[in-house]
Image (cartoon, rainbow, N blue to C red; front, side):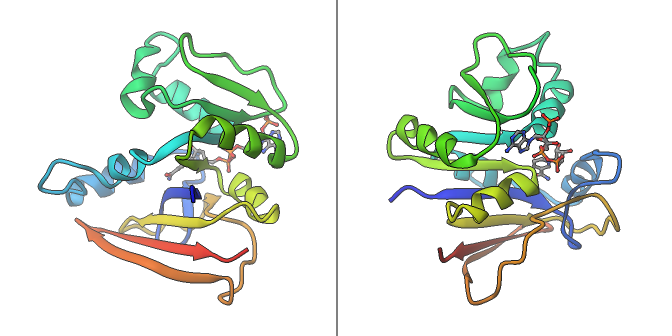
Length: 191
Ligand SMILES: NC(=O)c1ccc[n+]([C@@H]2O[C@H](COP(=O)([O-])OP(=O)(O)OC[C@H]3O[C@@H](n4cnc5c(N)ncnc54)[C@H](OP(=O)(O)O)[C@@H]3O)[C@@H](O)[C@H]2O)c1
């Protein structure tokens, strides 16, 4: 059965971006210790090999757009996400990236999830973030796993990992792995 997975890097205190919406702390943490395995495969690459559709919020999309200068260099999208189609949740008309399979959607996550499942061809659905969007999938009982790469940093404030209350009776630790200075934790969510 394909899964719907929220795979994300987080600080120890549960923030996925700092208070300035920056991910510089993640680059710094990477510089402390190599997350890439001896076979050259990063945790993200290993995870992404199983992904058939991506969902992300507007802030995340705009961050990727700006950070990778994608309107000027659209081919850089495929370096990260190959030709996997993405659904971007927004109330606005965000600029499309030439040649990239993007669908802008708004509101209820359930119809988008249905469309993603149909297109994913039996592969998993990746909720890329942010936390509230992952929460909307959890609210709709559509989130199967939270996979966090915990970076060795405490930020104090920022964008929350998953601003919902999910009791321990619904979460179970399914996998645990050390990669450099990062701890990767996979929690299965019962519906
Ligand atoms: N550490 C990591 O691995 C990681 C991963 C992903 C993201 N990030 C970072 O974390 C931050 C996340 O930002 P964020 O918390 O603001 O989350 P976000 O989910 O990226 O963006 C939130 C915005 O998406 C739109 N949106 C969300 N749900 C919607 C819905 N159902 N219908 C219509 N529009 C919807 C709204 O924007 P509009 O109303 O303006 O359209 C909302 O303000 C970003 O800085 C991002 O770069 C980090």
